[in-house]
Image (cartoon, rainbow, N blue to C red; front, side, top):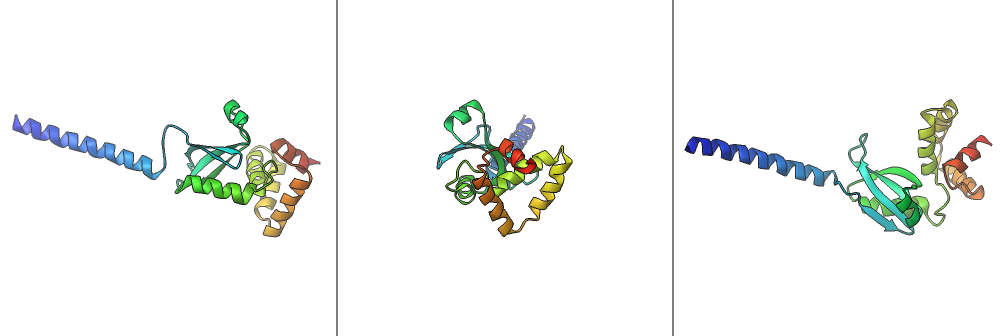
Length: 162
């Protein structure tokens, strides 16, 4: 009987160790079943899942309004550093979205063009050019987005194709 109890105790210890390791992994990768929502400077930002291409980043979804969030009508997705996700989101909003909340930034345009490049040759070439843009060219493009009032992916398509 003592031998059976010893075997059972070892089995229980192994199971508890596995469970503990799973909990630690979830904490390390900031993984949870409920998506965290961050509200900052008018943006609603929902934490999605760990980026499968870069485990140090989490995909987050940006919504312009509470109504858009409720309806699932998101503005864009982006992958941000998950070490301190809330800080990463706030820095992204401060540095990339600034005062012109509705105007597309260079990085947002780049993500949209990446998606379009998967199915259209024109956008593959455009993506190459955007990825090789200098900082000055990026600033000029963002100023042009503001001048032309480019606010979403449809506006961006019209911007590039006209």
